[in-house]
Image 1 (cartoon, rainbow, N blue to C red):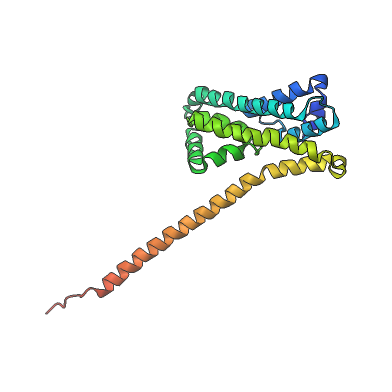
Image 2: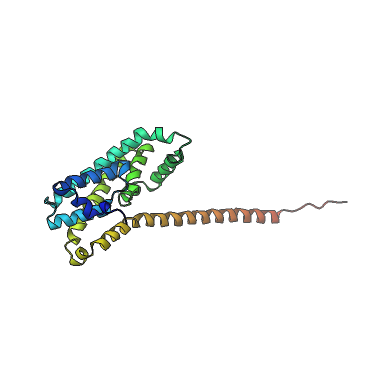
Length: 236
């Protein structure tokens, strides 16, 4: 599903004795730098848990989780201010086909509608977790609110997936079918956003139906009102 060097096992193994340092840098880049959107965050964290369980990463699990969570959070802080500082210049060009002002407006509406859920759920969606941070800065989202829920999402994502990999990696079936497991992790990572899309469509459908019912009632009331009016007879 991609080049061999992006395979989580190969990627981590390539760092050799600096595996943990490389892992922290990747998490930081994916959460804060726009160029890190292609990195395999979810499966990489799960694989890191496997490596800790196997002793390949010779660092206590709790310390690995703390370091990864901090890197994820710091990455979000950097990404937010990149969006805040560079965003207005990028999105103020009317001829730009990529950085459009309407994207900022739509992102702001997305944040206003879903609030904390958008921030936390974005952690588990590849690519989205990279760009949504910068877009939060572009949209001038309240920093205190964003960083608070970003920290919550960081713990759930960075520490949660690493711990999941640590314990599930000790199960023989999962250990012997690592590629399938990693694909399942990627699929599960987009489930939350699929649920949100379905909910949004249902809410929109309900709203449209309610508006249609209101219009129907108004029209029926008008018809009933017109039918009760007395039309004066014209004498010839």
